[in-house]
Amino acid sequence: MKHSIGELKGMTRQMLLGRYQTPMLAMLLASLIPSLFLLPFNYLCSDRNTIAMQAVLYYLAYFIITLIELLLNSGVKRIHLMIARGEATSVSDMFWVIKNRPDRILIGGFLFTLISWIPMIPSFVFEAIPPEGLSDVSVLAITELLSLAGLLVGFLITLPLYFIFWIYVDDPDIDTRDAFRRSISLMRGAKWRLCLMQLSFVGWTLLGALSFGIGFLWILPYTDQAFTNFYLELKQEFDVKVEFSEAAQEYMPN
Image 1 (cartoon, rainbow, N blue to C red):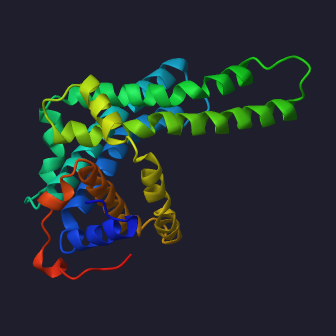
Image 2: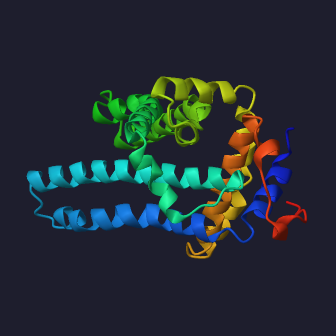
């Protein structure tokens, strides 16, 4: 059964009643651990007299820590899948991905990023080698337009791949190629609805920003759970597997 976006979000809020602690702590750890790892390396580039070797070490560390962050965020998605299925969860579940073929997520993340940045190449080239006769203002304006166009094209290209990380943590045996294919298959006919779902959280994002980021402690687990439920609905599993706590039986409108 396909629910409206409002119904899906209402059911998500019901699902999280009394269960916010685990996804909230997991989300915080997924943000804090990479930041703490990167902190010592920030000093490498804090000095104006930074040498080339320091810069290389910084960017190498940044790349590795970004991969760690990708794994941890995928682990958070596993927690949300477990919540949706009525399973008991703990913060330690976010480290499940590290023990279950993390290479799939790393390869998938690399390919996803590469695909999303390919449309940005024209703006990079234009900025690096601008045509002769153009003023600096014109070069800047055209570069910005090319960048915006690249971001839009990149978003549209990667939209069918949106759920690959949910698929990785949902199926420990699936490989990268099949994960991409399955996401594309799930997203057939659902792209516009996913965009509307994303737009429906703009107000919540603004609210989080106005609260100096404190509101995101509740907003981010809410959005992650909503998109997890969206994924399960595409799999036609949501209505069958979801279990609500006794405190969440009463429907909450959007």
